Image (cartoon, one colour):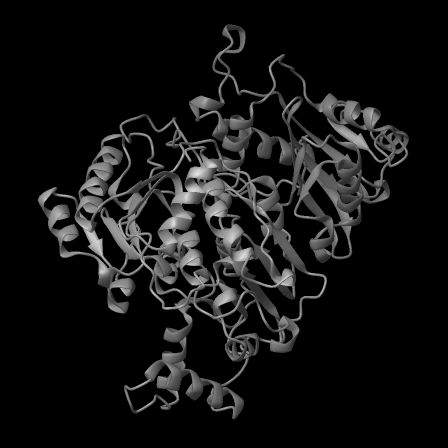
Length: 616
């Protein structure tokens, strides 16, 4: 089966009967390697072909569908068609001309990327894949068309497919042969996976994953060359399918670390924020201040039709309470009192419900039951857009092993609309294997069977084995980490794509900052909530971040320092293990773990590491 993006069922009333019929034929009969996009703004000019079909073995196809009836076509030439409608006869661009412009515009745009050109001497400079375009007339047979238009040049049979030339009753081979007869030239070499990704990267900018290492090509190059990073990062096809197919109503995504939850939230936010019909703002809310800052930085570069408010939960509470003049008077237990003031204000309707057209909640595992009742009540009942994302394994703020209440009890009504993402794409396979081995074996030994964690599947690239080093004291850790950071930077990793993570910045030795200054390493030390609010992912500095505050962030190279520091007094290390799991999975490529304190946590870390890598 081919992948249709978005799913046919999520297209609502915008898909016509003929388009739906053709989409189902494609889905059932084209190969599993084939991806088909329906009515998605495409490329530099954001044009709207009805269908784009990408088959790595056969090429790229652009299809325009018309649900026309032969009796209503009053006249036609090569550029225009006069068609009868309820409002009278109207002049329309000929669908062949329409799809030809879509096709040539997209191909000429893609050809500006040198990596999408043929290297074969015979076809040098041509697009890397065969391509073609055509028209599907869903209500007109070939016999009808030939009878009404004796001039075959107006609706030529090699470009126009009639209703009876592709049907549900044909074999998959017959359908593929007829469809790909629209491709006029073939090459022996199929499109590589990297080229498929580059094609998607150019055609659909909204699925790109921005990354500090993705530096554009030099602006000195001529305008005819696309400034494209050598290494691109985009949603995989299944992530894109989910993001584009969310549809209306409440939706839940339960995903492992690195599965693309936040990426899907961003796509959903941008998609909704371009809807002129929304009358109220969109709220994006998370627990972590620094994640909110990251989301703001990713959103601000887009032109939006609808205001988007991005915040962490307690900042949102503060704003609501300040507007209604119900802020707590005492600074003692201020956060707890603020929460209660907002809860009470919502219950007695001092704080109005339904303030937003859409509410998108990231890090849902860290939200309390009463908080979610308020947030679900903030969704306008007319639009009813709510997206809730969570991962039990990253719940490091609340004292629970999983959501200990039903989502329906807090007003999140998503029965049958829950998606589970169990593949980690962020980390290398080696980092993920290390992180899950450290975390899940321990955690599963300390919770009930009903709540046991399942290790995520690895979808990332191969990479280097994480390095764990034990030192005699904290200063030795620092000196080694500084040296490691310099080596990373020397290989081309930018400072803002590296981080030092620690159980608590309050426990870090002042020697660290001195060594960073002496080494002339630009850095940003995050110790307070004000530091978090000023955090800017684009600024060129190394970040020093407490482990809990790193949630939702990612860096090419991460050093986790003082890893065996036990913050609590309990014999149960679950909280420490969860914090470390979050920290380890922030590293996309390189991970260094250091420790000096000798205790039960250090024994767990070193014994697990030795067991993994057969060093015992």
